[in-house]
Image (cartoon, rainbow, N blue to C red; front, top):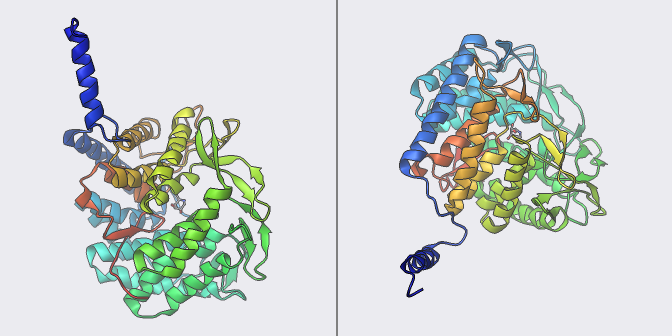
Length: 460
Ligand code: DMJ
């Protein structure tokens, strides 16, 4: 080496790099300029989506970005897109768009209608949206609507067990469908907790907590819950345990009720479930770590399926401080994104066969990058997010907005732009690259539709 100055220099550089490298941190850092460029792109995507909605679907729940028309979930519109998008516009500094969205909501939204609605979706998108809009803007008109809606939703919990029916008529209070699931039973703690905070009426949080704990107390000896339960009898109808559709946000809200309200019962319940999930569901295969599906009683694998909804769990783990495990799972999430061009709704992680090839513009994978980056500052998560955002902007953009993908292998589009694309996907994408003070995770907790709720240390 003494005789070879070039080799000596290389060795010195390598040693220097080793001495100053931080474990788990990629070497190449994103500059402030690169981050600002990402934010600019995402803001322009938001404007594009909103312009399309305003032009082709004003007043509807959602835009159909290929046929350039509007779509309502029910007989009438509940203005899902403007209400879901308002706080995204607000946080991104899109003031004109925020003003327009707010005007639509305030002038057009009413809940005094003879219409049956799905409790879960109306709660996370509309009640969640109204509460965060109120907290951000301070405009009481949002709270007036929230109070009216929450009182109507409360009637869905009038079942023999206290677990809510899936549907409730907003005018008559008539309920329907007792075959429900942990997510549709346990995802009210944050919104109803906030209602108790603002109205002083403890019924809201008590009702939401009773429902969630009726699920919890029916967990198996393995501390797992199943996928379908009858709210009239309390009997499990489908005992498959997993972390995706129909269960996901039940776990999420137990943990977040602890973060938002300091509820120790929820913390304990979350810890018990999280331990069981890691013990019985977490599985390693050559492409990474995934959560499998098992029978809640026997713990035996039922289906090795994983999908875009499951990807949220690494974000929750990161938020809870388990960044090592979260990082392993995020590698699997990123494999799922890159291996099939864009993530499929669901694939079999043992055979790598896609079992549902759609991509519905879902946020969970980027959401987990956001939490992991905030907790670790590892540039790897910025790189992952950059790749995902670039794929979405390239593959899903249409003249009128952004479209879901019918088949990730062919990139064939489908005529849908769900309101969570503006509420969640673009919001998390922006926050991943934005300065941290845009949104301080010590001060807010996101509901499952990415509506930020302020931590006020309110004693419930
Ligand atoms: C959203 O409506 C919520 O995040 C929900 O908890 C799960 N699914 C969608 C987004 O994928």
